Image (cartoon, rainbow, N blue to C red; front, top):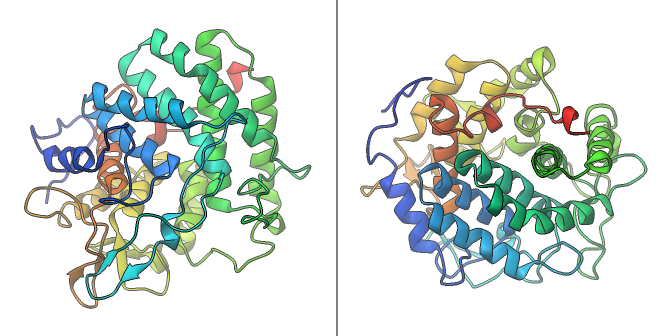
Length: 359
């Protein structure tokens, strides 16, 4: 297994298989779906674009951003499909179908363009491109603010007939918290105001830290999913000692030594994307040794061409499911970049980078 450390050069060609998998999935219109012929959501789509950016494939990354620009709705949102709702074929061990029922206008899906755009700018330094995507970032973040409650939490999706639940998600709101930061950085770089966004970010952070009753009000708690555990650290909602306590809280429950991070508490299943994200959360918490070790375990879950499986079921000792999502590949690329410090955007998730100065 490759054990990357800060200052290391990523071995030449090491992520060619991951990059190729993303490009295999990318469609003519720039969209990057979960799997062949599968669902597209703006969050995972954007993460895949970020992976391409780190590897220097700027052309195809911008094709992905062009897709977002072309498909954004007038209110700043996007229609996206929930991959978790895709039918699963137990015989083939793969997802099936072209979609996942009715699409949603998810607030986290919308916000993530800010994170992707700021990341792309950090790597390329292209202010002209940043100015071109600015109106789309602005519209998206204003859509998100429109769905913030007086308590600070943000409704998970627009109030459409098929998404009536007036509720908020810890993982989604934590990701939005990071997107507000990135949006404020973009605004500052281009000379635009961002006070409203920073005020919304403060209220959202207070809700995540101090108002747990505002989340999972109408459905079963999501605390069985590891993302609810580490995302407040990854996104900078919790920092310093609070972040380290959060990581220690459920480390033994979610982390399988030598394998990775479970996706779901009760399942003997580690997932590569969650493990890569936890790697970056560990860096943000100042736990570099643990981050480097966790990342090193992920490279064993690759196929013969270097693409990453979604996860590994360690009771049955098989890669499961039989899927190699684009966003899984991208998550490992981003984690490797954060660990090594290879790109100009490597610090984005691996350190706490505040945007209060953008007010």
